[in-house]
Image (cartoon, rainbow, N blue to C red; front, side, top):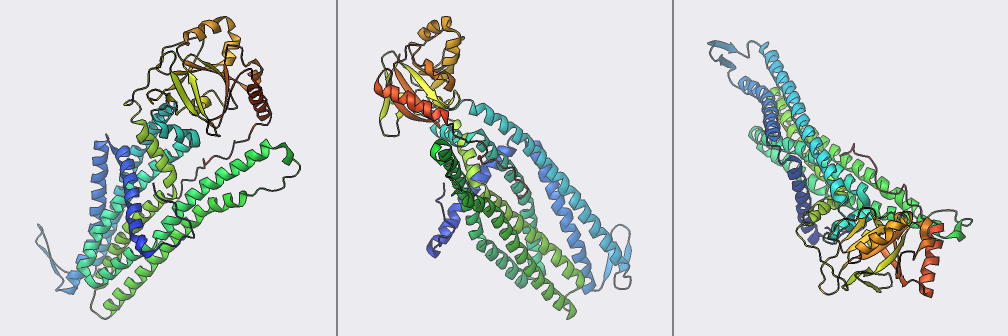
Length: 529
């Protein structure tokens, strides 16, 4: 992961190039991983795409070369022999042949455009299937977390949710398309560059050097794009916390008149568009200046009689191919920088989930001590296998599972998993911690005793909804545990003053439920990649 770079931070010269190398390596790793996932197993479609792309580049090169060939012939004698027909033509004496050259060049350009369309259509079809399978994979993998064997993946989905991961998957798919298209343009640009070197080496060296320098100078804009993405997430988190604080504090209902974080949210949100606008502006100005210099130089040469207009036109066409490859490559890398945090989260989640089946879970025995986690005050929560805990939370049944994702055996440090169990259908599970709905136990009290007896060799967490909190202790629980936002909050022995205080605190918090909806980073802006 890269270190945050503030917008106002000055990049020292001795750190500039190492930072470029590190960021380029990080981006290349992410892009390579995305392309591998998008196109692996699709060899025939990839071969068709490559063939269409090569034909596209060949016909485009032919369109430029035929104009260049006509110019070179006009520089010489102008005599041409048509193969197989034994036809001799003097291009200088018969200028109508120029229209034939223009027609052939136009036909080649049209064919090139059609081949490019079909090539990109195949790429879109491949990435569409990859996106469908990746979304399906995310859904299935998200059902397996939280799990102590994959703490990183568990925390990612706890902090950002399924929507945050699908955003990274979606943008990763679009970036795969951008790079697949850019690779073709870069290959064509390299081929056109050799053609440019052959026509006018000094001018081409100046142009290529200027383009590389311009790309290097665009690097600060990519840094701003990365920073704006991070600032946006931080500002949204700050806004969410501020709204939550206002909802939890009843004393501010009549006094709150403004929010402190909304300006920062708006600034960070619009910064992405600002950076994109600046990037496009810089590239368009650079390309325009380079084309202006080339047109002036080549027109001066042609007017002085040192170059033919046909060669001049061919040079401009080849230059356009080269600059198009450069600009597409820059925009592809810029798209990575804009969505780098989301794509990295998706990448880390998938990679961390790959080891879930390679790490064994601990087998708990009656009497074992299990460390569930730590409270905000630093106190460790340690229970014994066979204990029953009344678990209170404002979230769904899975929230306590996130809160104990770091559970482990005290004696060995091996991870202990948690699993939700239906009391009407007790199943065998390797999990050492079971979470049972108190609401279901209350509805099936006759079955409850039998179900809980079958779980006597586990740590049993009985989950109570807000409406059932008055029934805490109905099933022999010895302790009360509260969780919030996937973290342990309070832990106390039931029936004590501390336990009563925990229940009272939870009742007050439940009466003022925090508002979280509508603040997630789940926008659908994809048109600028």
